[in-house]
Amino acid sequence: MSSRSRKWAFGSAGAVVVAGAFCAAFVSGVVGEVLTIVLISGGLCAALLLLFLEVGLDEERELERERRRREAKDRRTLELRRRSRLPQRPRRPQ
Image (cartoon, rainbow, N blue to C red; front, side):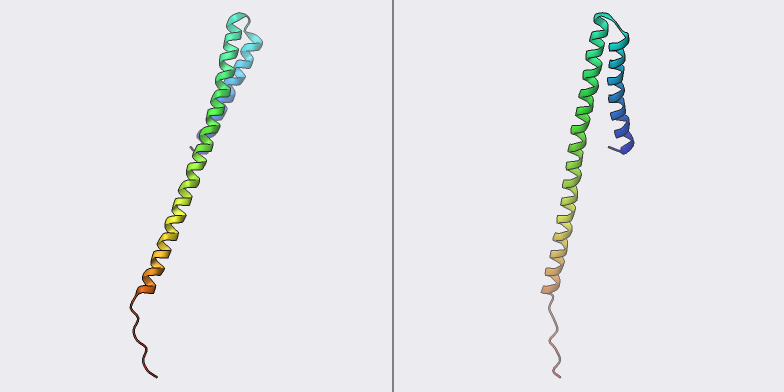
């Protein structure tokens, strides 16, 4: 998730909460109460889901970094083992 889309998503969730607050202030009756409950609940739930998504994506990035480090380490270890197994020429007598 890019930084720009993350900002849009959290901003949209905040805007829905603000719209619910405006409904509470300016729309009277049962319709106002229902709109307030639905909009504020929806916006807060969306923000919470986005937080969970962000945590999950961060964990996936960390796992990918670990996998790459492990693969690089394994490649280096394998290369060192190959080098140590190469036949060496006998030394010349001096």
